[in-house]
Amino acid sequence: MSLGPWQLIIIAIVILVLFGRGRISEMMGDFGKGIKSFKQGMNEDDEKPAPQIQHEAKPADDGLKDSQVKSTTDTK
Image: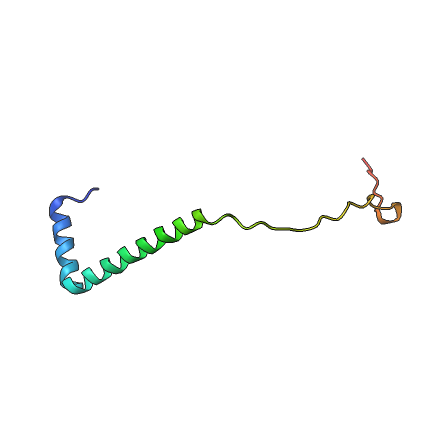
């Protein structure tokens, strides 16, 4: 089911009646500012190099000792 041009016109008129022209233009202005701010933030992230995480790795242990290993037997 698709919306025809008459249904879209009726929906637009109902929205204008409910919100008024001033409120709709205010919402669209806020929407535009949000998009502009988002794009600006994305551009700022591209310009800065990614932060480098520095840590010191410890050498690996030799593994578990025999007393730490739980022995299991397969009864099948």
